Each structure stands twice: as C-alpha cells, then as structure tokens.
Figure 1 (tube, rainbow, N blue to C red):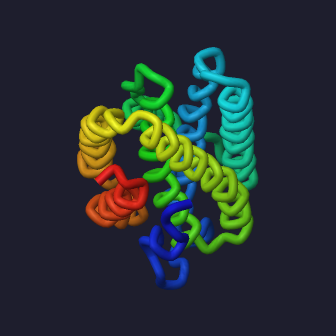
Figure 2 (figure 1 turned 60 degrees about the vertical axis):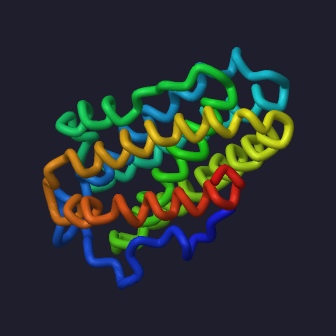
Amino acid sequence: MLLTREEMTLHSAPPKFSVETDREAVLRALSHLFYGEVGAVKIGQWVTKAPDLEGMLEIVKQTRDETRHTGIFRRLLQRYGAEPSQAVVGDMGELHGVISHTWEDMLFESMVVGEGLALALIYFYHDVIADEPIRRGLRRVIRDEESHVEYGEQKIMAALRRTPQLKERLLALQEQLVQHYSGFITGQAPADAIEAMIAETPMAIIQMHMIRLQRMELL
C-alpha cells in the first residue's frame, strides 16, 4: 500500500475497551463491522463488468474475502452471546450507497476510497479493543483489506498512465465520496464511548486519504 500502518494509526495508546467492561460498545462495534462487510459483498456485482480475466478473478477473490469477513464478525458476536444488532442496519445501508458507473470509477470508489477509509477504522478498532479474540479476527480481516486497497491503488495508477484525462473525473468523484463518508461519521450522534472517539477522527482520516491521492499522483 502507499500508506504505512503507522501513517494510518488513529490511536497509539494501549487498548482501553473490552467486552468485560464495555460490553455494549464493543458488541455495537462488531455489529457495525459485520454489516459493513455485508455491504462490501456487493462488489461481486462487478464480476460480469470486469474488462479482463484478471479483473474478474480479483472481484471473485474480494467477494469471497468480504463474505468470509462477515463470518468472522458473526462468530465473534456469537462468542459473546450476541447477534448483529438490527439498530445499526439503517446506518450501514446509507454508508454503502454506490455511485460508480465505470470500472475505473468502481476501483476508485470501492477499493481506494471506500476500503482505504474503512481500513483506517478497522486499524482503530484493533487498537482500542483489548480482547484478543477480537484483535485476532481483525488482523485476519486487515490482511485482506490491505490487499484490496493496494490492488485499487495500482490499477488506478496504471489507468492514469494510459488515460491522463481520467484524473479530472476521479477527482470530482472523490470530492463526492469524501463528503459522503465524512458526513456519515459526523452526522451520527455517538451512541457510546467508542463512537465518540470515532467522531473525532474525520479530519485525520481525510488527511490520510489526501496523502494517498498525492502518492497516486492524483493531486
């Protein structure tokens, strides 16, 4: 990836939340992660629109990865005697609106912007939650998500070398996407202490995103 783990770290202190002391907050976080991965499975709709076999196989891989991630988070919830909370379903449905129309738009929206921003939050959850089963599950998810972001970065940079005029369209798209994602975070009233910490992160996450765009030579 074009950003290091350290550059995408939002919380550098020891983990401060656990199921034992902050059960509802941690379970709500797991529910958000579960439904986030359910929404991400929608990338599978692009398998028939891939421009070549490599793209098709990558979409199949990513769809399989996201499906496996839903299983990881569901099993973690069940481990602690819970199921995904219906209270967060509406939030995640709003988050996963798709505006892409072309293959390059999708790579940028889903892998560079969407998964890039989501990865920063997944790192955050890993760094603030102390329970080792949850941290272990998050590390499994992180490895896959990093590969998705890297694939999107590399393919978009290759597309820009072939078609420099693509830059203008992607920059217009990213403006819409950043407003959407940052508005989603700031527009939600924090339900617990973890969400209150997330509500303080949009500017830091957007700065990370802008560094990524600079290294992709989009800015």
